[in-house]
Length: 74
Image (tube, rainbow, N blue to C red; front, side, top):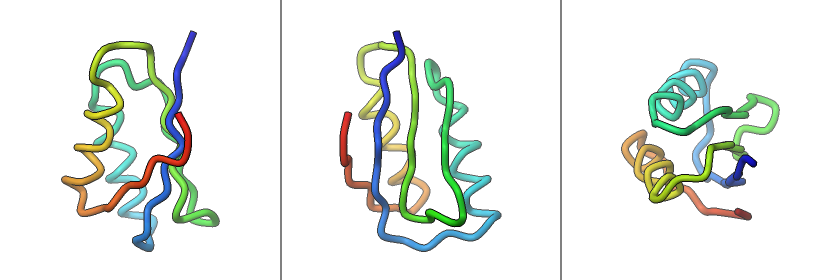
């Protein structure tokens, strides 16, 4: 069973920043999928295997990317 976080970010994205953010999130253990598209630049969906601390790690990575994430649903 996978878990997911649907996250809203305020900042606009470029193709390069989307790829960098996706790459950073995929570096996290237990992250299985990251959905981010230029036509929906403020929405991020991250799927992950259940494991302690993964949601906070996701938010930490987004913060280190210069983003201000807001969890819409978990």
